[in-house]
Image (tube, rainbow, N blue to C red; front, side, top):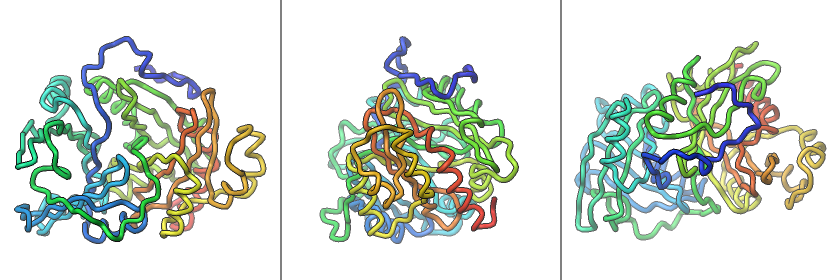
Length: 380
């Protein structure tokens, strides 16, 4: 894989000529290992507006853990906690804090996907297994990704239940407060020094992804810190995984801070799409979600930099929303502060109006905002 692709180049997966040997239909769900799943589920329901749709625990025959499934649009999170301190999930939380353990990818044939991946060098975590109940059958299989993160292939076309066999449907959620989330746009992984290209090769070789966009330390840098990033996308472009690694800088970068507090590689942030970012962000703010802010000067120069846009700049500044444009349109984005006490996982809210890129024009303002947060924590 070449590492010299200029950052402004955008590779469209639909232009590739090779056959996609591992077709992915999208992201099925993301499973978080957390210290208290009941409280985490309450947070995602009241703050992010997600709806509780399913539950598994001792009452359903799952005696070693408890899981709550929350959903909004096609965004589905599973929040899982161990019921005993010796459990592997408890060890995961002790090491990493609350964080993403599994990224589940929807496929037509989980056994085929697992076979393709393992034949190409992936380490198996779970061999294909079919589980059934009176709602049908689901087949699952998993491989190891960076750090303690796994990818689970899930085949569910013959299942009609709320989530998976062993889960009890929740028919009504009186406290959910929807905000207009649609689907997961992309998920960003942070890996260690000089590990980015190895994971780029993994996604290309093992899963058939292609390099979608590349940013080097000249693109993503401030006075104090820098990082490098390559965006990998699957054949149809439904799944995008930017991979970040640290780069040399005068002080500690956000990726270094993440790796230190997460104690290894892991998912740094999840980008959630909306059709109306003004509504979504204003509602999230009212419901207690905290976002990063950039200086007033960013907005005085905005129209000159990105041209005419539909949204009033005054409204964007009031909410702290960023804008960037490429050859295909523009996009609006904003980033939450970390949602854990450790400075690890955060979320991005994104609305695309033609643009397929990732906000290169916002990098400096955004990362300077992150550095102000690092300075306040004493970690810059």
